[in-house]
Length: 303
Image 1: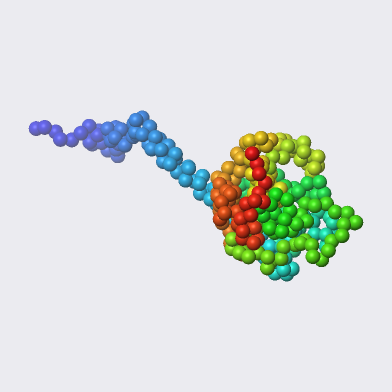
Image 2: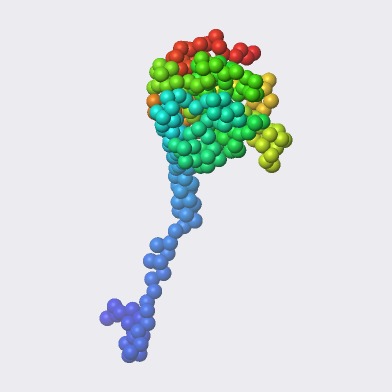
């Protein structure tokens, strides 16, 4: 008769009270990963990561741009409150009816923002330049800029900053009541189509010049805004002949992928690509001027 019991049964029957485990190595081998299977899994994970990382980078960039738009929105609200109280827009830097000192526009907004120029409200997370207060020698360096001049290269009554922006005075200067020192709110014909504040256009700031003007030591040259959003200055510094133009363009493209966060006089905010914002079409140019006219003839001519 053929015995159907296995060796483990025989041993256990011979030694009562002692049970020996029976192993099945073939089953253990079946549950393990082979090297090829492991490599396939790693390859799949790598492919998924390569697909997800760009999306994650875009999401982070979008979040930074949204944060920047929030800053610009708050600044535009402060601007609106200033206009509500005084019925005119802050001058870019000098209001001789108050003082001949250089008091730049963020200082006029401080009672409404509760923030100074070097505080986080005026710092775009995509901005790579420096933030420093302006003085009698230099404009404030930082993230955001004011549409002070419109399409005219020099101070004018077409922007928001007043015709006396960036002009030096002494006690002998006579200011008549008819002089256009400030831009009244009634002068802005189309608030929803008039640029107010936004990401500043960038300029090259050599570290030696930065030290001379602002008394700060920097490890290298920087590309910073001058508290100004100006179509003429921007077109000038991006010309091939301008020192540091390639670095200016590179730094600009890193910020929101070349987009500018722009607040208009009615308070709404748009993200506008640099090629659209600074183009010289009639529709784009009129957004710089408070009379809602293009005034293309006022643009500075660059080769």
